[in-house]
Amino acid sequence: MDNNLSGSGLSKAGFGSLFGAAAPGYSNTELAGVPITGMSPLSPYLNVDPRYLTQDSDEFILPIGASKARGRFELAFFTIGGCCFTGALFGSLNGLRMGLTETRGMAWSKPRNVQIVNLVTRQGTTWATSLGSLALLYSAFGVALEAARGAEDDLNTVAAGTMTGMLYKSAGGLRGVARGGLAGLAISGLYALYSNWDHLKGRSPIHY
Image 1: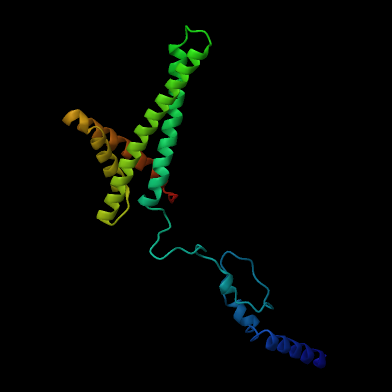
Image 2: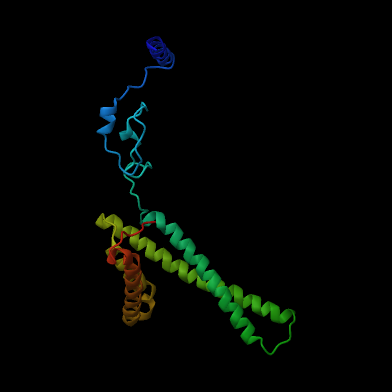
């Protein structure tokens, strides 16, 4: 039996010399003292340090200076595109409703179809332009506030929403500016409350 043991040891050493240095061995006492979190006990005969298999943190690589949550600039493209698409969809449905209502007394013919298509196109373009402009102003103010303050929090959201409403309604004078600012403050405040609802209820918020 001693010869068999010595032979197996020589074969392991031979393979270790062929493929590089052999992995360090760990005794049963050393493996028993290693804490294993969230894993079932490993076999003490494995030549693997269990500490290297313990994963207590996120296993992904971020660029230098990047954060786990996307910033204002990264979200600006998604916000503007989403608002344009939503406005076009809502405006098209509204134009279809208006077209069917205004041409109710007409028979199904080419003039009626052309009038409905014109209303759908006009309303879709109008709503897409309006919501896209609002999203563009909001994103620009958000990026500027983040760069100026050096922080990304709900204060930037509320301030960007308020300034967007004020600038969008600035053509209506001081009363229009006040109404636009109050509307932007209310909408951005509700959004900030919704995004922090999990945190207010004691759960960790989800970042996108």
